[in-house]
Length: 344
Image (tube, rainbow, N blue to C red; front, side, top):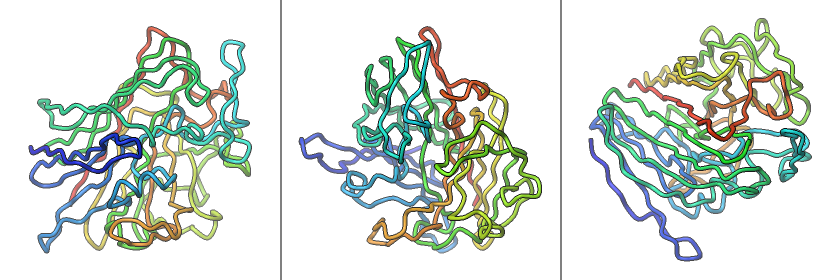
């Protein structure tokens, strides 16, 4: 295993930003302490040149000036909270309305714009970086001082493991995810609609016109949302409006057991990504709103050139008592794991 640290740039207040690269000799990834963001995943190909399967930016400025969460950790509550408010233990909390009348990915003061503390780690399972920060009481409108740790680990068997830990001194909703945009053909490979996807999920959440869950779970059977058998992502694309932006139900609640639920494959190259998680849900997002974004090496992204598989708690769960609870209380520990397993 090799781990390198390099300067990635400076913020306007002269804070240094770093880039960490980890390689197991077959594949590698890079991550920055700005937004705790994955910036690249390099997989080998026949011509000897690695292919980068993550959309993103070549420079720090790209991450500073863009708000589409490329590769970043999202919190304190990923996805949407309806009405930009919730009530917890009899007290109402008001949040930013940054998505119509709702809160998306924590509001305006996002984790992706924060500098995280970084520490190199070596374990018997691999090598990586552990990022930490404290989200203070009242940040984004949420209660509680929350100490957060996010660990990225690369194993010898080509697995990128992301582990999330958090503790709070007050009851608070928490829902952390990684918002990476994957294209197994490469960041400049064009549409992902011809790649095949399998999701071992029989239900998804019904949503309203603002993409907030109504509280109902719907069967995927005989709908364009059915990926229980592998199919091309674009097969039913003309039936889902602007594209996929849906939360799939994996289980009744989060637990310590990793469940493998997703397989993404690019048939032409033979590259595959399998996703496993401890989370109860996963948001499938087909990059519906990235058109015109100038990305790596000046490449201009178009809609549907990537797929996000955001493992997480159910959206709006603070307002939906029938959903798996996303409330972290003092004395408890939030602990979730997601693994991206690659074959090539």
